[in-house]
Length: 339
Image (tube, rainbow, N blue to C red; front, side, top):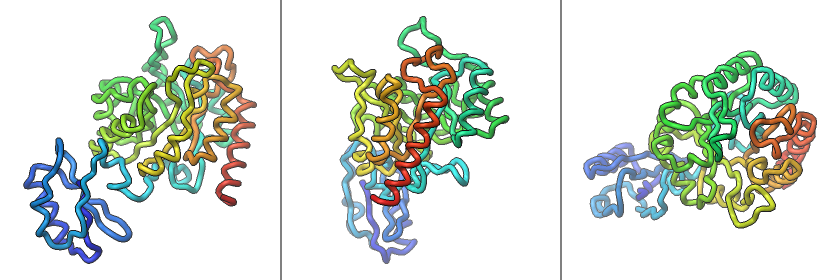
């Protein structure tokens, strides 16, 4: 339920509504706005009777929210959420297009320094790299784990790059949080609810990838698990879904980018590497996501793509990435100034 207060409502009117919500055993969430204040009710397991609110002063209307998510929706939060990592790194502000790049997996200190230095020279500020790698086959490279985190920490200290890396289970959140600037939840863990609760308690932004076959409602409901814990800095990442089509690794669902913008205030980025699985398709799909309204992209870059221990077929070499980077920035500037 969402209680919209009249623009002339007093602080006492708002407090009276909050007290009533708490007496009913629920949690009030005050949502200030430029033209109105709204108060959301969370913690209910079903329909909330609005009778206790009908005679309270200062209420303009009561809206029963039927979506399986609340805090994620624009009903509760009409303005766009912006995630800020530094004065010049804003994801979702509408003033810049965020490009996250780096290898799928941390393989060695030499590999990470080579790619990090090259990306930093290009202008990249956000470095991706998996220390913990969930893989379909138990025989595939599983990542360097704690050693991978140590390498990321060393690279971060030397280059000043911000780090995006995946956390796979609740017990790892604290150790990953010590290194990561953004905690990534991979597609396979989108519905690992214990993990979502723990990262929601962390003090770092969370990048939540869409599950392999998740609906939009399921994806946004997973984001709700994080927001309920008090975190508001969640970035959604569309990375393609599994369909009957096998020509590409997944089916890139660019239509969800403008759809998410309609129903949710959270920033959304696109991962053309996992969405296609083919390096030749990364550039056109990354460019297409700009026009679809994405706030950024995440691209797999490797100094020697064909020798990558994880996702070699979709990894981009450093020179090709520089060309993609320039094209993305040109298209973003054109769109911002002309459309």
